[in-house]
Image (cartoon, rainbow, N blue to C red; front, side, top):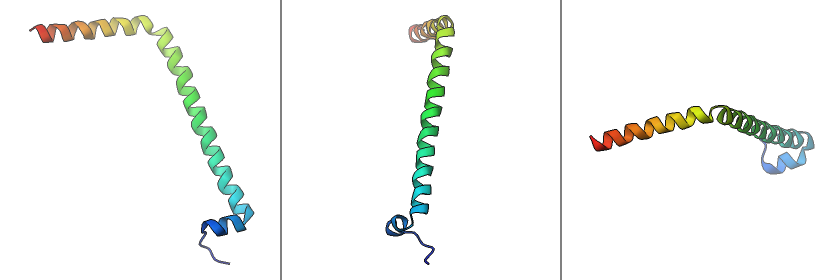
Length: 70
């Protein structure tokens, strides 16, 4: 039994292949979950802070105008 696993060996041993596929599946789910959480938190954050954000944007814009004019 060789310890090195080439793709052929991976297919020959279903247990290892299954674990390998499972690991990728778990990673995929995890990344999707993280993206979902980020999206929901961001939408909540944006909706609750829309006024604040507008205010900040206006402030930044005014600062830029002042800097350009000076």
